[in-house]
Structures are given as structure tokens and as C-alpha cells.
Length: 166
Image 1 (cartoon, helix red, strand yellow):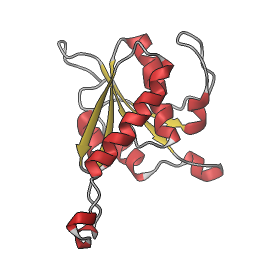
Image 2: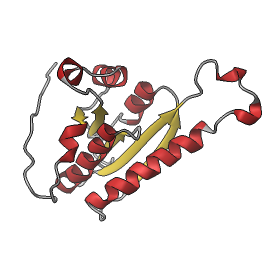
Image 3: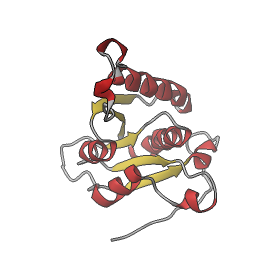
């Protein structure tokens, strides 16, 4: 958690453009009304292995593509509460490592998970598992269906909360 007395409160959200990450961003925007924390939306990118074989002119601009996905997600979720300003961050590197580093000193890290049904819904992906194991702050995991709650700030949301204590 944010242990520094002079550090501003902040919530770091991992955004990959999928519905679950948008649900995480929506939740963080609502949460900032309760905590006063700033919201930092982080997306990562890396050049896939084997991409070096592509001709230079055909190589996609991964940073630009990641920034576009993040911008679209922020614009879509900004309607949740237009008063809340979300700071976008596009950072090269492995998603789990980057998110844990960016969440250092944050009040919490919020992620989405894309489990679809049954057992897969209960499982975390590799990024979620990495963050839960290595983050030095609380980690909130949102399922896409949880993010569909249409409510205004101040309303009570209904849903499950699972707490793990180490």
C-alpha cells in the first residue's frame, strides 16, 4: 500500500483492451470517488519472439498500437465519471513485471481476468498470477461480467468479493 506520507494516493490498472480490463478500469474510476486516489491505466507491449524475421517495412508499431488500445479503453470508460482523469501509461516489457513495478507504492493494482465459464472463470491467467504473487500492494481481480454493473458513484454494487490473506 501507499506507505509514503508525501506520495499521492494512486490506483494502477492493467488495461489490454478486453472487456475484463475495461471492467477493472471502470471499477477503479468508481473507487477513486471513495478514496481520492489518482487512476493510472497501464498497458504494456513487447516485440514477439520471431518478429525479427519480418521485413522492416512490415513490422507493426507495437507501441503505437498499444497506445491506441489504451486510449480507446479510457475514452469508453471515461463516461463512467467524466470528472475522474485517468493517466495513460504505455510501457514496453512483460506485462506482469511492468504492472508490479508500476504498482510499487500504489494503494492497489486492479486487473481483469478473461475466464469464460465454469472452471476457467475461477482461474487467473499468467499475468494475474504473477501480479498476485509479486505485487507489494493489494491486487483486485475483476471478471468482465462484474464490470457490467451500471451504477452511478455512491450506489452499492452487488457481487462476490474474495479476499486472500498471506
